[in-house]
Image: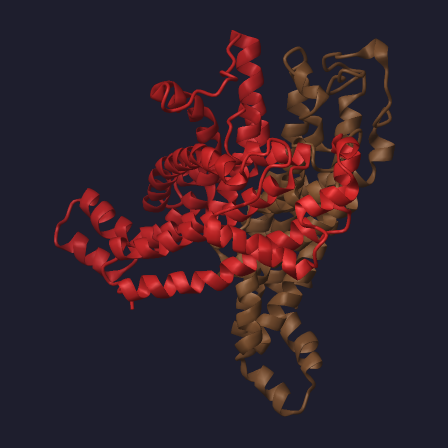
Length: 284
Length: 317
């Protein structure tokens, strides 16, 4: 598998400067998320009425909100939530995409027909609308958000994997393995799966950004992870919104972080696609 | 052409039925009892008993019967049920809100095309120049900025600096066409620029591919002006996949419209959905959900039909 050799990393830094910047942003973001406990000067929900709505200063880097909570700490913990949601939902999504894509692409025929019609119907609904409808029934909360985001993105992404499987399926080495009497499962896992790894990796990396963006939109609408959890989307909505006119820094920090992270993931994903799977260029 | 249209419409039927099944399953079958939630969240519980509520919603019947009743009422009578709160037919509400979202969507799409196609062309004909680089960076940036944040910034900062804030009361088009367009312009621009990112990249990629074709060399060789080569020969051929993209982006556009309607208080389908969610008004939620799916499918059908206008080589069989 070409993806695991360090060659692509060297080429990333040599040929894809923007992608390398993206990788650095992503690494900083992961670092902040993992070590939020050590990095944050205050607790995420530590209230301090004396320090309400303080502008950014040496003590409070990003200022404080209407309850006197330190925005810098909250943004750091927000990074952790985004890391958790982004990685787990994107993993679920990729797993679903790969399973559906392989089944649909490898077996073809009636199975393919059936799966593709369901995917068609599913893809005519905006992710946000499905999520809003689901959350309205089961209530907001982290596990259900991760599950539904994973499912929604997973079904949509299965098309890309299906395409890759179909192009791999007709290769001579697959026919050779089949004629040597290898079982279906063995063909799928040992021969098809390793050969579709590049699009799978690219799909996963772009999914992380998509998930983070949609989750923040959902939290912004008050339907994501409920407050006081410091999600970036949630920090831009709710009670904080009325105070933004007095304390504009409340509107800046979470949005800037969100934009930077998604930008980093996007440019890194783009570079990764160019390096690993040039055929996918331009598709999105 | 007519045979093609009939066949396409026939093919839509199973997909739409599947879509309606998805809506039904999503809203009615998920864990978490709708009735419990309604009694807990609303004060309906004090006025109506649980059994009466179940009977009124038809939830006491077997699942398959419920689905059949629901879908046949929609198909035969256009009856989406009644709102749990206003007792008004959901279809009336949907019809009142759909044009608003449609207008916002069309304006956003217009903005997206106006931004994306010229920049995409420029990026392609000046490949690897600084303007190409700038255009591509801009497009990835627009893809990364969440619309709700841009909307918030646009609301907050002009208010602080100049004391300007957008009108909160919605101006209907019939009352004041210009005021209405002006009010929708800001959300449409925000929605449109974020949408333009993907379109711009697609335009660029397709233009680059088309510009390498033999017939473009022929056009140059016969002494046609740059303008003629780019617009008459290249763009027209490059545009077909770009149009397909519009169909693929329809769900993204509608999702974005929900957020814009919330920020700018525009009474479209998105705001209706969010209001219904906060009041747990399930007939409205299912109605919006289903209507959005059907609209997206019809947009994709229109996109497919438009190929014939753009590309004379396409014949519908």
